[in-house]
Image (cartoon, rainbow, N blue to C red; front, side, top):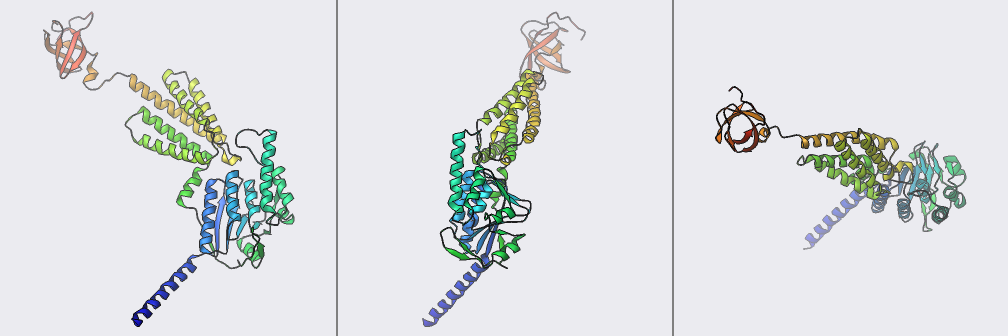
Length: 437
């Protein structure tokens, strides 16, 4: 028994040692993520996942490489909340040279334990912009005061220049990397990651909760934490120009399915694309009233095909679709709105294709069936035998059994009125004359 107990203890120690070794090798000393683009819910989710991973791995620091024109206030608030409550120190680094951390990016930069910029970068310009229309003076003042107070709430805790940081909100001021460093808006200007870690190595920082931590980052391995597949897809969809294009393709596919029932493939593609677009629009600052303009555009395209107004309704549909695209997403920055050239580039070809498809469908429905037995109705034939009331008639190069209501002499021209199986129902053609058989 003692021998077995000793063996079990030895094996347990080996397993624990292996697990500890695996955990140590799997954990990263510095976890890095890159935010390149607008600040929106997907960026918020990505940063949140990275901070949770850093906490689980007991990382020494999280490096957020940031370059952004700005973004949504709600997402910015959520990101800052995650940063200031993170047990792992967060370094926000505006990089590479030529990049910016504007608007929402300045808030995120100032919220970090360490704020750093690369040479040739800039930050600031955080004045609030209303998503829908122009703000009145009262609303503008309320939003300014709210965001200015939000800025003060964490900048003061970081020991940076509160008054100057507040001017980015109230006066839209911006600073270069050197200006921000001299005026105590950031902590470090570093030409690259290695330079950044070297400057921070051994530095003691004060955390948001008042505790102090000494950073040991020089020569530490950096592990890049990528977006998940879901986040990459959603981040791609969060571009309003992509969303509008997907919505337009989906609508066109459904339109084609309605005009050619049973095609199946256009219907499936259209449904998937429309649902993807609606999902993305649910995350973006969307004016769903603009969808009425898009629906109206397709109605005008259908009317153009039906009434042939020489392009008047078609042009109206293109204008309606273009305006619907421009008004569809009303973000606080230009990068979060549909561009004019995108709206025109989608609307004009889509209008032409839709009118063309609708015209073909209407012509097909108006044209008389010319194939099969039904195609014989209305055709002119010649009685090859007397019809009294049945006989033979020659129609379309074929000899058919025919039935007439009355007696029809041989050689009389007859009109096919109906087809009953393999028998034609005919009657003499008005003003018909006998012809040679």
